[in-house]
Length: 289
Ligand code: UTP
Image 1 (cartoon, protein in one colour):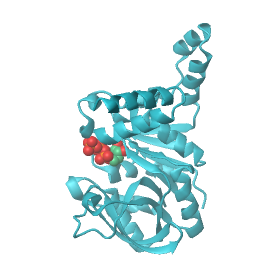
Image 2 (image 1 turned 135 degrees about the vertical axis):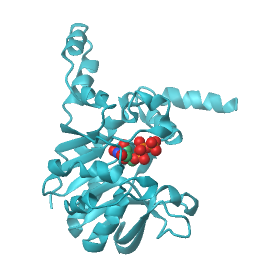
Image 3 (image 1 turned 30 degrees about the vertical axis):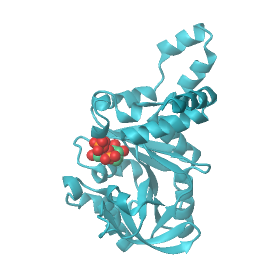
């Protein structure tokens, strides 16, 4: 089982980040000096992915433009001797083979993934949500691919979340296999504490087999009237092997303001150009609070 392709659903409306996301896709908001989507593409590439499909919509063409060449700008940077900027602008466009498909109606994450059917064909593939950023030593997508390959199974990335918070996520029913890997036998979307199957919640990364497409095609709308990926995964785990990986790393949901700010601060503290300055700024600010 070799995973060469990834799908990044990025066609959501981003209503939790309005008004900023009215005209700027949330995936294009800058996290320090790069847009959110670039971190996600970089994770996929670091995990060994070669071809990436971004699921977009009519309001998100800034993403296609970002990963394209921009000859006029590059000539100007070249003439001005701005080598570092030129390198970074080019690097973004050369990161991977990037493809695009539009989700013509915002019918939910499951529907967005289903739009990748032709791109994926008959291979296993990774899914990285377009607004979930991971900070990890080993790319989280790589951790999932390793488990999927070892167990010839689909894989979902999970972490332990507090009972009070589980209703924001999908919970999974698991039995231990080995180390940080579990067998998945069931799952549910946005459960109440009474309905939750465990404290392990699915967080933005998946490795799926193409069987998921037939399931998604026949799903009826679930939670929130949308075609839910979790409903499809629930059916998949009943008919084919699936593992959950309690991945090592920190996940940031940049699709909400608090997650976006946490990511901004953490990444800026790690950045060579801003780290020392920001640490000093925070210290002096904290004194006056
Ligand atoms: P989210 O629920 O986090 O994104 O979907 P959203 O719909 O943009 O969020 P809000 O609630 O309006 O702020 C999880 C992922 O699924 C994608 C989103 O882009 C995000 O990466 N998605 C969601 C789609 O691609 N299409 C959809 O119809 C819904």
